[in-house]
Image (cartoon, rainbow, N blue to C red):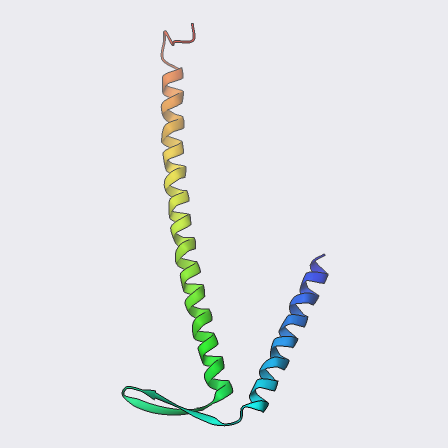
Length: 100
């Protein structure tokens, strides 16, 4: 099963590389990016690659922040559970409990 999954990932990577190569070959014209303080001339394929990479990094950053929030919440709940369990043990050990 793991071999099939790795093979699928590899084939997807090869397909993406072929698509990127075809895109670069079909769009050799440079474009000019005007960034308020300077202008940059890039190939279309490079500009698209940079835009995709920036989007991917932003997505990873957002997912990481959500993951950190989740880990923090889990830690808080685990501490609350330990406190609640200690309280239950203390109440059970009291003499004259209500279970008589």
